Length: 248
Image (cartoon, rainbow, N blue to C red; front, side, top):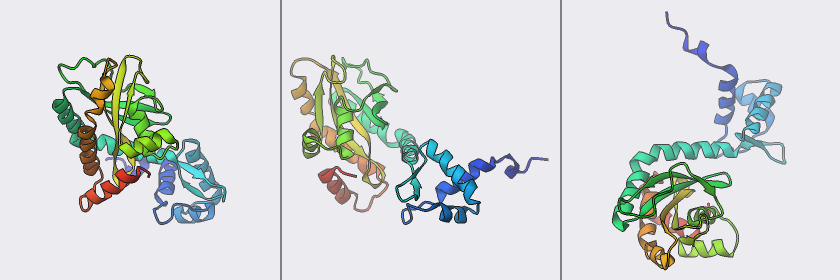
């Protein structure tokens, strides 16, 4: 006889997940007593679970002693969304762009204070193909990182300029031998999820060359953002608004 499925469940884990499930868009902040009441647990047990979730970034307590979802839940959701969309949307978009411009293309995502090269498409005749998938780089150096920061609302003159023109070019900044141009990509609710990037060797006139790809790169990023937004009706109007402000 097969085991009862409930007998294989870990009680603490199911209780912790139940706590995460009670937070909604309408009620993003809840007090300990209310959380305990809704999950039908003693306050002492609920507090221990909340503290455990807090230690991993899945719950946060504010100054009013209320609790909310922590940043780790956003990261988890973004990873799920990106993993789901890689094969259907992101990689095909990179391949189309690479074939069109004859250069290597990459997609970067934010990972705390760094950025990760999640996908790379190598153009057969391109000279710039040393970078690898999974490479971790500084978030504040290089075109891809800076457009992600700008789209997330980073303050400063440089980031205001990036938001105004919609792209950024760097030469020899993240790597002495490399140059790149980056454009942000938005996902569900038009939150920035990463950046499309074209890489090239840091040679003479490369900045002008990469800037020449800006319009094409922005169109590719806009089409990809529309595909990832999961909102077909009125997507163009929302994209125009997102592009105009670049703030979540």
